[in-house]
Image (tube, rainbow, N blue to C red):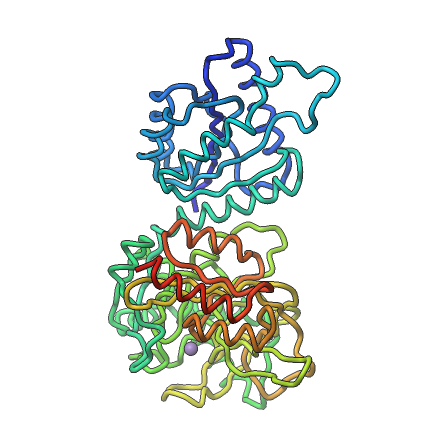
Length: 495
Ligand code: MN
C-alpha cells in the first residue's frame, strides 16, 4: 500500500483583508500540526495554500486527483468562501472528501469579542455555504463536527481516513479465480462487469492446474524451510497420526502456500477464491495455506465467492497498521446456539479462517474434510477474540449491489469443542439473534461474510455510500418493521 496522505484545504476569501488571511493560514497550520501530533490519525495531513479563487480551487482539487499519494481532501471554511467558487473544482474532483466543520477557537472570547473577530471566525456560517453547494451537487462526503483539538473529533477523522483508504484501494483490488462459483449456489454469484464499473475490481479466471503447476514447481528445500517455521510457530497436534506422515501432510500446505503466493505475486493479484469441488492436481484443499495468505493481507472467498474475497481485501487494507489490531477474516455462519440467553452463531468454514482473529495458541491439525475427494488437509485451529465487530455481506440483487452490515458481539463459547478441528468464532448479532438473523435474511445477506474487529458499521456504511451502492445496517437500533420499510423504499431509491 502507498504512503497515503490527506490534503487539508482551507477555504476563505479576500473580503476581510491581508491580516485576516494571514491569520487563516496561521490557524490552519496550527490545526494541521496538532492533528499530525495527535497520534490518532493513521495518515499524515498536508496543509495546502488557502483557497480563495475559482482558479486555485480548481487547480488544487485537480492536483489532488492526479497525486498518487493523496487519498482525499479535508475541507474547512475558516471565514466565508462563496461556494460558487467551488463548483468547477468539485465537479472535477474524484477522491474522498471530508468536510471538517470546526473553528479555530473553542470558546467564544466573551470579554474581547468584536466584529473583526466575528468576521474572521465564521465557519458556522461559511461551512454552511460550502455544505449547501456539495449537497446541491449531490457529492458524497463525510462531515465531522466539533473542535479540532477534541480527541473524539480526531478519532472520527482517523476513522474516516481508513474509509478513504478503502475507497482509494478498491480500484486496485484484483481477484484471481482458480475455480468457478460452486454449482447451483446463488448468493456467491454476481455481475463481474458491474463490479468493475462500481468498485473498480478486476476479477479474472485461471485454470486450476496452472496454479497447481506453480505449486508443483516449489522446491523441497523451500517447502521444508516453511514447514520448520510452522513447527516453531504453532502447536502440532498429532491426533494419533504417525509423526512422519503428519509432517508430509503439513508439507503439502506449505508447498501450496509458497506456490499460490508466487503465482499471485507474479500475476499481480491480491485476492483469491478456491472451491473444494474443483482442485485439479492439488493434493489437498488449500486450508492452512489460505489461512496464512489471509494473514498476509490477501482477500479470500471460498466456493468461488469473489465478492467476499474482494471485500475482505479492502477491509484488510482499511485495517492495515492498526496498533494491537484484533483481526479481519473471511467467515461463515455455520450453526446456532439457540439456548435462551446464550444465543449466538458459531462461525467457521471448512478450514479457511484467518489467524489474525485468533485468541491464544494456534495449533495445526490434519483431519478428514468429509467433503470432496482429496487427502486430509492440514489446517490452523484456534478460537477467536471477544468484543464487538462488524460482519459484511455484499450481494447482487440483479439490478444493483447491496452491502449488508451487521454489528456483532463476539463471545467465548461456553465449553471447549475438542472434536471440532477447525478455527471458530462465536457471535451474537445485534440487536439480538432473532431480530438480527431475521433482518439479515430479509435483506438477502449471504452465509459468507467479510468480518473485522477493527472496523465500525459507520466506516463500512461510508464506504458503501462512496461507492454509490445501497447499504443496509443491522445494529442495536434495528426493528423488523423499520427494516422492511427501508428495504421497500430502497427498492425504489436504487432502481
Ligand atoms: Mn462456504
